[in-house]
Image 1 (cartoon, rainbow, N blue to C red):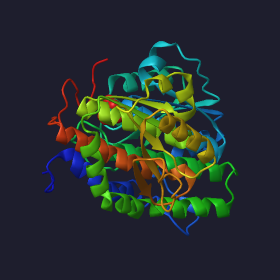
Image 2 (image 1 turned 45 degrees about the vertical axis):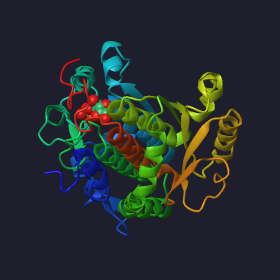
Image 3 (image 1 turned 90 degrees about the horizontal axis):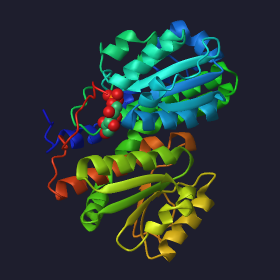
Amino acid sequence: AKGGYDHFMLKEIMEQPESVANAMRGRVRPGEGQIKLGGLDDVLPQLTAAERIVICACGTSWHAGLVGEYLIERLARVNVEVEYASEFRYRNPVLDPERDVVVVISQSGETADTLAAVRQAQGAGVLAIGLVNAVGSTIARETDAGVYLHAGPEIGVASTKAFTAQVAVLAQIAILLGHERGVLSDEDFETHVEALSKIPEQIQTVLDGAELIERMARDYRYASNFLYLGRGVNYPVALEGALKLKEISYIHAEGYPAAEMKHGPIALIDQFMPTVFIATRDATYDKIISNVEEVVARGGTVIAITDEGNEGLDELAEYVVEVPKTLDAFEPLLTVVPLQLLSYHIAVMRGCNVDQPRNLAKSVTVE
Ligand code: F6R
């Protein structure tokens, strides 16, 4: 069942070229001038006209939601808010059926708080759309419309391939809305569709370099604290990298937007705490480099995830992991993969039960 791998988590990480392709199959077609999301057909006019999209989810799915916020705001220029479903449901949120659409994201489709967010939205007369992996699950049934992730069953408790499928679906929604709303020209639309359709093979390239991550894991397996920093669309990736490490290797880790480091976490930096930077050459690259320098100046160790061919970090970082170049907006689909592998290998080396971490359940059906 584990397809020859020692753990479901590793199988699911390795399967991502295929699961992301499945999340796009029949939907993203370069050269055809359209993205076809059948489950949204009936609500597309309302979604396109929405003045605000409120994304609700928990855990890793919430991190995917944060990536979605960047994608939808950047490509479609719609105001997006991302909420923890547990907070949203009890806050008596201000919702307007004329302006708002709620989008929930869930791998299992059974998360109690996320389901409650659906009911909250519907109770206020607001359209609720679900991005769900488990076919026929409660959230899939109760939402007004939705898109299945088609990532296939995820058995490992730590979510990996569901996250990339969620981001791939959010990217499709962002491009589709951008085009419908006239923000993306036909040409921009095509550029994004083409870039997105290359992602599965680019994930494979990242996976082919997995040996470096294993060596890295060996060096850092005894650390008791990790800091993960990223900016822009890679900030949620920092959060996700930290969550993966916490949940399966029981190492304390925190994710922050890189610029926030100065406002507190910098006090923690010493030679015993590795800092993982997701530092691709996008609009804020120069800024993140100064953060890297600040860490190095304080004796901290840096692991950098960057894009192919960037030698600018070689002198500063202990390890540099390169991922193929894509459009800035789609980087999380590649930069998250080395972080999944890092937490996997560290957990295995520490003797942790990777697929069944202590105290965690695959679907959280109680609040
Ligand atoms: C982390 C993880 C959890 C889930 C969260 C939401 O690896 O698996 O944080 O992401 O419990 O679950 P779903 O997506 O099933 O609603």
